[in-house]
Length: 435
Image 1 (cartoon, rainbow, N blue to C red):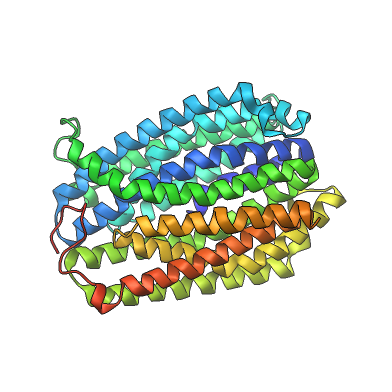
Image 2 (tube, rainbow, N blue to C red):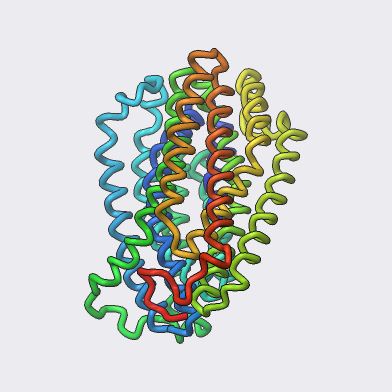
């Protein structure tokens, strides 16, 4: 998961050397394109749940069908994202961003939107391997894609090796090409790996079954909604930054990219917790379920406490890695302080919701997300920024409050759902395995 974020981190670091306006344009585009990305990731999380529960119940055919139908869902959502990117171009001015920022971001928006199709396919294959206890090969393929992206950035952003210096557009081309290569590698892994052969579909091109789509979507829609509500709050925060200044947008892009990168560590722990909970749920080993969840919560909180300390101590040097203008450096350092405060809450909420997902508990967490991000985070951020005159820092304080609310609500929900009186004798509805 860090490998997924390192592409965005590399783009931010390398585009930041071109100037504040390209960096602000990258912040705006990433905020917009990130919405369909996280919606797709949430929708496809059902593949991980169903494959892991099938693995626990020793039902290899079910795992293969989850992969086959999940790949079609990923392809459809990817195509819709590409179409949506083209549809947005004529109406970008409606977002109220600075004119020079809008003028700089069109090509990057189209290229980043196009990269969502291979990214969705790659993510589905990655989930398949991880849920079957084969995480290392997908990780290495993703890291290879990151290195390819950095190399292509160096060529296309700055015009090395005789290539034209394309700036921000070059970063878009680099990301698209790297994600295509990553998707190709992960498809080969899912189809050809001997360790996964027993779980592969018996007939790749057999007729698709509506019942499988119903099962996957019934688990995936609430998770996708929860992801969308969370990330749309952060995306709206980026839009509000544009109402302040280009420097505020640039500072937000740097800070949110770093915070999103650290978030991937507890997100990875959460995915492991989801898979392990799914394994023991499918196998009927309910006594292990609660222990797995709370150990994961402790790991997520501990990891993020370390990152929070690093943000406090290294906030100014970190800011100077990305931007050179002193005003942008100072503002970025202030945002790192707020990011440090919500690191532990961010780790707790993602592990807790992942543990609940392993139990197929997805609807109530989505409601908690509505309350946390759109009743607490966004209104509080708007008030603190524009009414209390705290500017960009006020927006981030609101986001911190929303993450804290989510962490408390979701952790308590897992506590209730994992109590002995809540355990079932069979896996929950919408799965096809018997514990």
